[in-house]
Amino acid sequence: MSKSKIKGALLAQGQETSAHCSPCFRNSKLYKIRLVNKQPTLFGQYSYSEQYQLLAKAMKDDLYKEREFKFRHPNDSEKEYVRHYISSPVNGNAFLAVGQFKNDKDFAFVRILLKSAFYGEPYLVLEKYAQSFRNPDILAKMVESAFNWVLKGQGVKLVLEPWEPDEQVMWLLDYEESFMNEMAHIAPNDLIMVGYEDALEDYMMKLARKNEDRKPKISKKSDDILVYIMTDHKEAILKFLHQAVKGQMTPKEITRPFRFLYDHKITDRIPFKAVIKEFPEVAGLLDERRYNNWTNPNSTSYDYDPHYINLKASFDLVPFG
Image (tube, rainbow, N blue to C red):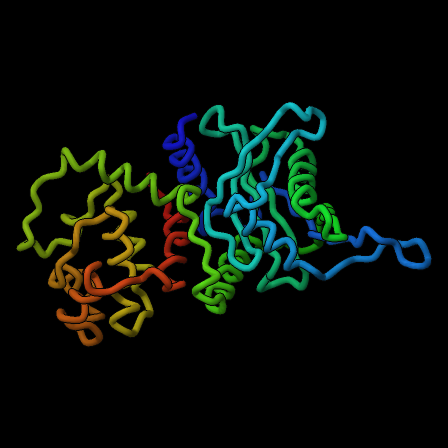
């Protein structure tokens, strides 16, 4: 598959893994993440390590291509797989896809939670693996090997233990909450921008370019917000805006999702009057001067705003179609 088709497939499949799905759907399996010290104790036993920061660093090194993961089938070393990050790894919480990408379903999702908001220890979720791997333990062994190759010389190895808890694990909600918690505390200099690996951004920019030729001339006199949405999924985009604006109280918070969509060429620059018509509840919180300032890329920057960056992850869950 071409890069653009891969990204489109990731986006389409990722949207199915949304807040509207069961929090623990059928085609998923959970594993506890263990780090084991390679050096045995005086009694010949192997102990667990708490150096989970080594795993977070491994993902960062992989993303920056300083020491990349190698995904190979455990029963056929010639059979190689590639990975794409769906969202930026943040302090060890990551969402990626692993597969050969021969078609639009030839991959599985791997969701890693080193810092869980709901549960006391780190774990991993394999999602939508059936078509590419059938047996999730095969994929789990591939993830183990990929990490352990990067961890060489660190004195520890990764072990994934199948986890079948008595109670339902709300892993999707846990990931969203954990991701937000870490984004709120991460230093701007440590933010990892996914770039090419961000399936959403390039896909949506291509979609916007595709629609550019058939896009009608937009009159800035219109106060209908749908006129300014430049994709075929107008209602889904509008629903995303309502969810993102709900509960926000400052001009910057209210304006952030409008700027996000404009920066990613999903909408034209929506005039203030169209915003107020669609969102009358913000009329007393936002004035036109501040709105125009925050939506103007030449006036303000969101480069190091963690909430702006996290909108990519939220947008990835928008149910299109």
